[in-house]
Length: 139
Image (cartoon, rainbow, N blue to C red; front, side):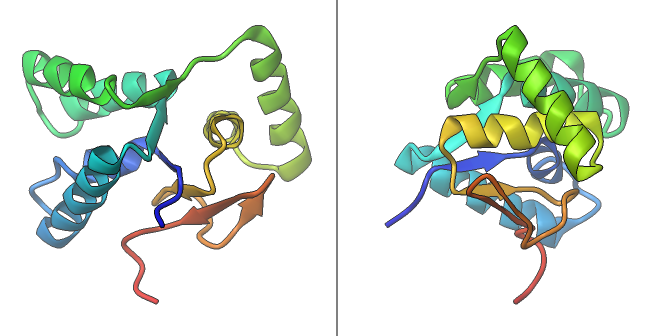
């Protein structure tokens, strides 16, 4: 049985990165599998970061990046209130991770996700019931 899973920006970026074909294939497979089953979650932050990274670092046209963000926005999207920003700041302070990573972890927690797919965060770390999994690391 598949669990609700939160996707960090870097997984979507890998799905568009032609310079790493194995990662690209794995990211596409993972995203597609969770999208089809209805278990994929992102946040507004992920949508914003994806657009910036795709256009600036990968050279994706703004039009294509916008279309991809539109597709990503069909997933379950976490939207924050002011209290969520305060909670992420506290998480940042307590766990010594970047504020932006704390926002991602907090979004995963409030979404009810069991897994946070991320290449950037420490794989195996568990915060508030959410376990970080780097899908590109072999067991």
